[in-house]
Length: 150
Image (cartoon, rainbow, N blue to C red; front, side, top):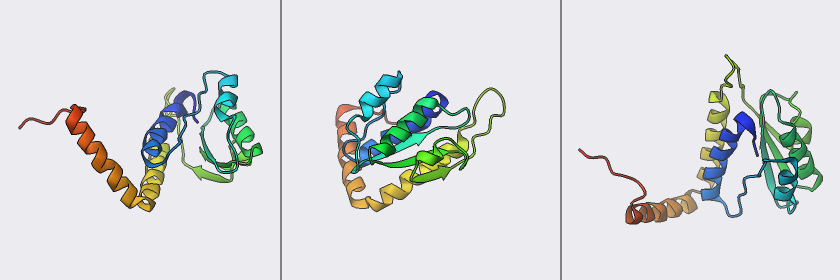
């Protein structure tokens, strides 16, 4: 889960985790009630990843507290141990998110997420190879991607 500028990081993470695991859900955060409706079945066998940087989203903080209270393993991707996500997280992965202007820099958080995805995919090497072999066949058959012309 990630909202506002953190939504792009959460979406990127969701896209690739969805290729690696069954039952990956992007938590809908269009309203406070959507958060709880998305998390209603979360439990001890689940992992919830919350992404938030200053100014921290209260929806993400509340979702992480709810998930932790339901027994889920919680992972925060945030900027520091002082983040309001940290107390509700079993694991806190930290990356700086500087604001050089009115735009948040997501370079470091995206690099952290990329490293996480690579590490997890290496644990699932054979499955990932099979998945991408199937996907390549589907992509070719249905013309999902254009081929470069020389």
